[in-house]
Image 1: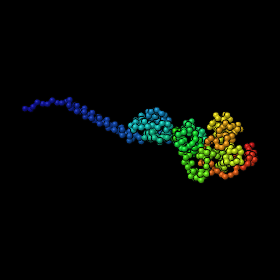
Image 2: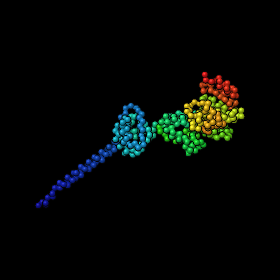
Image 3: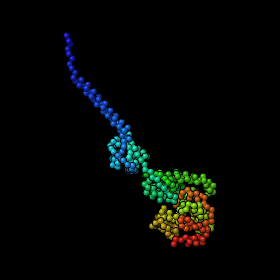
Length: 370
C-alpha cells in the first residue's frame, strides 16, 4: 500500500521563482549600469559637440563657479549638447574640483573629453603675445599689459616695487625700472603680476650676463660704476637715440659731459627725457609738473624740485628713466670716443653733433622748426 502523499509546496515554488526573477532583474540592472558606465567612459567622451563651424569661445570661470553653472554656460554658448551628462562625466572622473579659474578658451567644435581637458588644464589658457618696446617705462609697460588683458596695471606696478622680488634678482633699487627687459613675450591671460615681473627680470639677467661676457674688458675698466649706474645711463641713451646707429655716439656725449672739465655746468647731463620722467614718476615733488601732458616747458627745465632734472642736478638721476634694450646697454659700457658735448635733432630721428656751444647754437638755429 502506498504511503501518505506529500503536500504540494506551492509557496516554495513561488518563492524560488521570485528569487530567480529578482536575480535576473539585478543582473539586468548591473548590466545596465555597466553598460551606461561603459558608454559614459568609452563612447560619450568622443561624441561630437553641437558646433558645426570652427569658433573660439571664451568663458569667464569665476571663483566659486559650480560645475553645474559652467556646464549650462557651455550649453548656452554652443559648446555642449547635454550639460547634465557632461557634469556627470566630470564628477565620475573626479574633475569637478579641478576647474581652471579665469578666462578659458574653448575651440569648438569639441568632444566632451576635449571640453573637459580645456576646462581643467592649460589647454584652455589664452595666450597673449605682447611686444614691450625698447624705451618703455614701467608705467607704459603696466598700461600695455592692462590693455592686452595680461594683468592689472596697478598690481603690476606694485609688483615692480616688491623688495624681496627685486633682491632675488640682484636689483639694488626701490623698483624694477630699467630691469624689465624689452622683448616680445607670451603670457597667459590673467597672469599673476609678480610672474610677469619675474619673466622680465630673468630675461634682463640673461641679456646682461651676455653683455658682461662680450664686453669683459670694458666692464673691468668701468671702475666706480655700479650696474645701476650703467643701467641708468643706458636708459637715457635709449630715450635720446631714435636712430640705433647713434646710440654709441650719444653715449660718448654723455660720458664727456660727466667727465670733462670743459663742459659747464660740470657733470650736468642736460637730458630732456629725465625731466619728463620725473613728472611721471614723482609729479608731486615738482611744482612745474602740475598738469603735465607730455610736453616739456622752460619751467620744468628750471625746476630744482624735480629730482630727475639733469639741467639742475649734477651726475646721473636717481635711477633709470625707462627700460633700455641690449644695444643701449652696450653703448653705455662701450661708448664712442669723441669730442662732442652737444647734439640737436635735425629730422628723421638723426642728430647734429657739436664740440662747442657756439657750434651747437648755430646748429639749433639751422634745425629749428619753421
